[in-house]
Image (cartoon, rainbow, N blue to C red; front, side, top):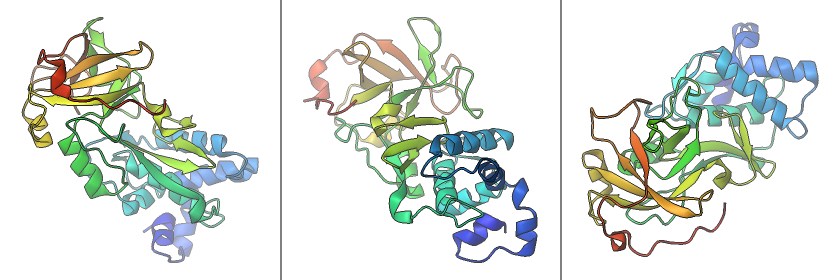
Length: 288
């Protein structure tokens, strides 16, 4: 058990833990912070960058469907013992690093920082996205509703995670990823994303497009669980084009490249069901 696992259970690190501290992921960040006299209040951008680079140094892999999104796994990540996980783990690891006492962290008051989940618009027709950072809620949402928003994502991938949208207009993998949800850290009135190494003024800032309707195989009343075995279609509002387009799931074994996590193709100008009314009364977006 390392320094951060001990701190996580309110125990004091042993001499052996402390001796190995500099070689941990968290220790690597804190060494840079000490050398440059960073504080969380004044140097959060530098801290985020150092944390991201530490993930890269430890060859951490981003695996959205790995069911290990809990605070114990986050502490193990800071100790350099977990090398792959879903996005809740690095977000919670950054949170633990911020609240950890010196010299292991930045001693930020817990009341001022939290893990902040985002799952798109709260009123998706045909879907039921919910906010919440716990493993069970996250895993349940991931299984039930495949896509809630789309983010920019390098074609070459981030932490080993490839883009997962095939652009039918260019016949190549798009620099985008279709997400069920994503977790970041809320602090100082901003949202800090340790996976992408980005900062957002609002959580919607992580989106390139928001899903505003879900239709499963032409049936707007189908159970979200049907999306696992049936073709689903998402109506997506793209702010850049000021219009809605459609993205569809790809039947198993028919994907044309990209991430093995999930396959999506689009954009299409028209709906697969041919009935715009099937999406019901779409809600207006409130913030971008």
